[in-house]
Image (cartoon, rainbow, N blue to C red; front, side, top):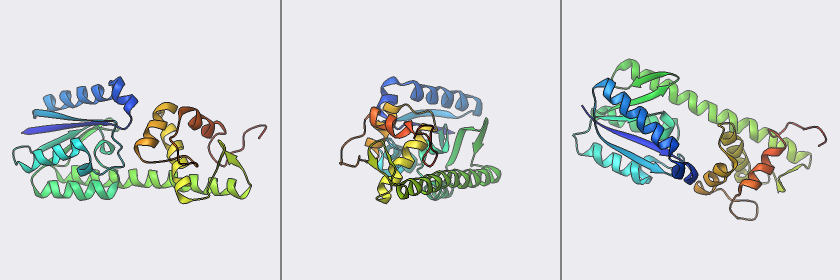
Length: 226
């Protein structure tokens, strides 16, 4: 019943504040106590983007190494997106874990917990991963359509010509996605830097630049006076 916990935040600001990491850790410890799991370690990823695969993250490599040893049979995380970057990544990795006799435990699934050690848990994981992927794709699709509409009208947002490249569309879509999760302007800028997004001139994003992009509201929606 040995288990390893995994916690991650995507921005350096969140890592320095420690609130999110500590909150994740506390809930994982409480869950392991309730489930009778022997929590032997909690691996922390500070300022690491979820867009990176698990094996490309320092803590992710530690987790994979711990599982390869054969003694750890349980992985515990708060949510699916702490571990995996998309549905394919989640389902491929957990299928390999299943074959190795490793169960994934998610502490917060809309107020419920999930354990892939059962057939029902595996089914819910598959559904959860699929819906999470759908939500991300819908956000990107809506944003891309709206930005292309603005481009056709010759509208510039935050001083940056929008929609000239797919990369610009992905960057702005990412900004609105993060803001929709109540991430601060400064943390959004740090996340964009961590994920390799650049401004039109190839520079780093700043909180003020992010604020300007968001100031006009969700792309495609005209604000009074604009």
